[in-house]
Length: 202
Image (tube, rainbow, N blue to C red; front, side, top):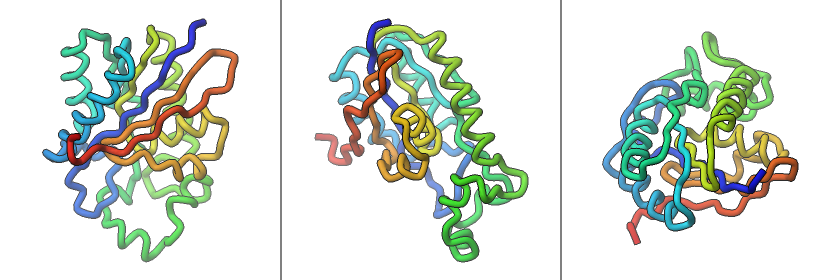
């Protein structure tokens, strides 16, 4: 099997108003869309995109559809690659969650805490890895791009790079930024780029 580049593009800013947003379907802000467009120009300069997948949520899907049509590449809309569902915590102010559960992100990732009605970390991780494997069975070519969310990207980086989720979180792909991983079946993946959005559009 030939090596390929996997680009993990995180959606841009949304108007979250300080709330925890998982599967709530918010659109991009104007700045969020501009950040993704600027990152996209850097992504396609690296190499022509050959295959795409996206979360079905609007903040990812709308941009991905536009670029797939413009580039003439196949796009898979993958429900399994949507952000985590946070149950009773969905849309709650982050400050309120942090006040009652200061280490909530670490506790979630260690499987020690699941919000009522939400996905456990293991359910989320299994869903994401299943969705990624399904896409990889169909994806072709030397540059494959996934447009998705911070949590999804961290799960994939942890799995592909053989590290812990809480370590992958420290890599911090910012909204509108992207990570690139060099992939070759039977060999360890390695991170080649980690880029923040270019707010200045330079």
